[in-house]
Image 1 (tube, rainbow, N blue to C red):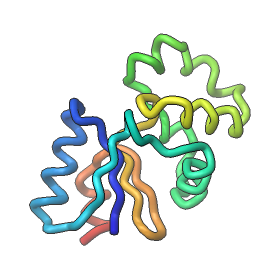
Image 2 (cartoon, helix red, strand yellow; image 1 turned 135 degrees about the vertical axis):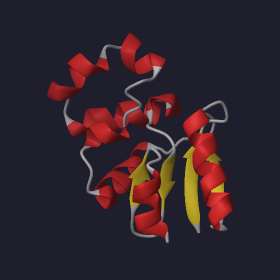
Image 3 (cartoon, helix red, strand yellow; image 1 turned 30 degrees about the vertical axis):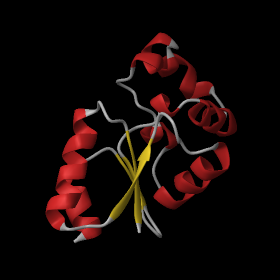
Image 4 (cartoon, helix red, strand yellow; image 1 turned 180 degrees about the horizontal axis):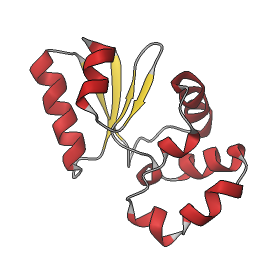
Length: 117
């Protein structure tokens, strides 16, 4: 079953959940703030995704901007970036959709259609 990490006040997460339900796709909802993935899990998701690690960061989030991560990430080792992501679910790009052999960050309907339908 798919696992989707969301934040209940996020409009993009709401759209993604509505889309999954409209397609009849079963999923397990995870609260990214209260039950965010730990470092080991994020490391596994990162490896499965084939995406650059920067795609796992919520670059429009308040904490990302307050911590000036756009300046720090380019020189930060991946292990440290993963620890940082694991420290606070609000730093993680959402929704985070996890399947058996894939991971998608954010909601782009065309990408989700291609992967799920």
